[in-house]
Image (cartoon, rainbow, N blue to C red; front, side):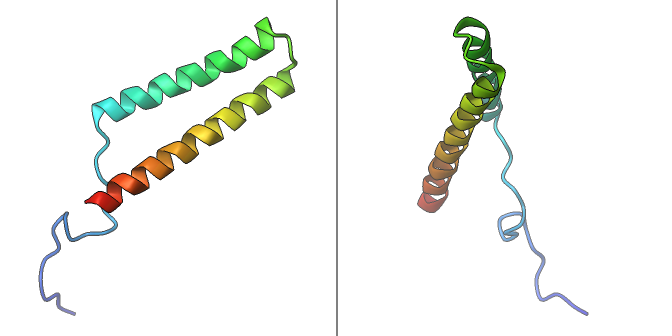
Length: 78
């Protein structure tokens, strides 16, 4: 079995792009804010553990959706 040409990292569609330090810092900040949001709802507002978990999970889902949409737009621009 032979290959006509060697694949480089630009040609390989399965090769993930590297995550920048700014992106990692943003993900860490989002995680800290989500945990703080959970603790605020549970301990300060006293809305219950399950309600606080649900509210934090909803906020995390919305954040992940926003990240996916922004990533799609950025990838389409290239």
